[in-house]
Image (cartoon, rainbow, N blue to C red; front, side, top):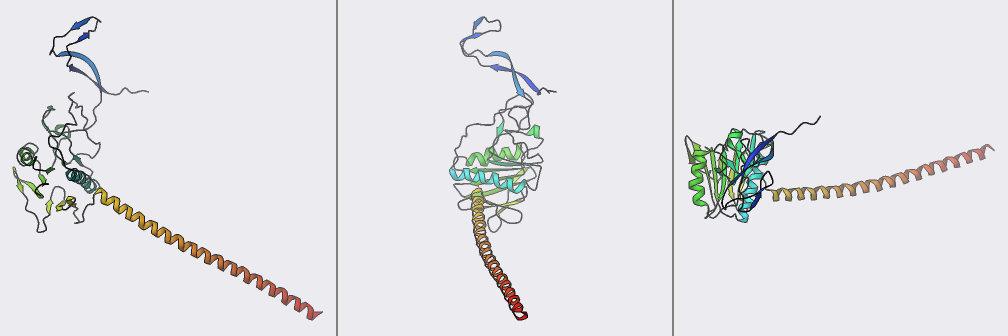
Length: 299
């Protein structure tokens, strides 16, 4: 039995160029320049999955957009590190948490023009799967509790003024982490009542995120290091690759040593076997000689 895939039939407004268009009855018609022709075209849209660009309201929510402020290489590396580190830290412990990077959050119901894409963000209380194209807060029933921005001279004002107000008042985030690459400054803000207040760092410069149950600390090269609740640093992908290579080399060395030991033991066993065989032959020869001497005396 074949089950028909659920679908939506959505009439789309099509912007028609000032050219000759074919009508339904085949006759041509000319549209004035700049006119907007409403064409009732049957557009088949598969049933929406969670986080699809197509909303259940029939509206399209874009998942990509050109960045206003370009990122440096270290900033890209840091965003990827924070994204992967928080996933590795949180996902095994919390099935209801979603970590994303540079992904659009739509936070005004049924309005695809109102959105923001923090460099890294975490939302608790929602499933890890599926991977979303976009995040609509009214569909998910939640807003991110933790957001992070990698700031620079070009984005500093926006990160500390417009986005600060947005995360504080519109999304009502519980924590906001800013790392300013040019100033090498790490700031963590935590919600206190209706406002986000600056969290003072520890004596060693680390700041503790209650929302993530993790520490963040400035570190040369990586820029910011994440530490788990046990105080252990979370490695980045390159460090994981290096660790894997080191473990592989160690295992290969152990394998070589074990192979050499097995070969030595095998050779020793072969020597013992040959010696035992030689002794058995000597015993048999002596038995034969004793039997011959006995037979000679009896004769």
